[in-house]
Length: 111
Image (cartoon, rainbow, N blue to C red):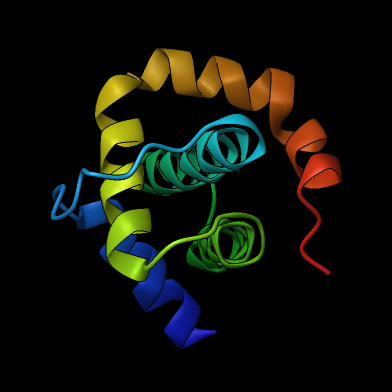
């Protein structure tokens, strides 16, 4: 679990080291879901609305979505997550979370 959290933290804090890859279709949707879950987890934890364990579970789900539903190298995924993170503000992300979180888990299963 610590490895998953470390990978997710690296993805969230990354700067676009490699922005040459463009994701489309299902992979772009998986990236958007992963970004939405990670951004929401960190935001809710910072506001003390969820505890550290809940945040870690959400970050772990993010990593599993990326591993299982997005192709490319770790650097490509990091860059794509950074781009997604920079495109969405917190209000839009939380709105997406309310509307799409459950759908994301059905569309991009992790087990």
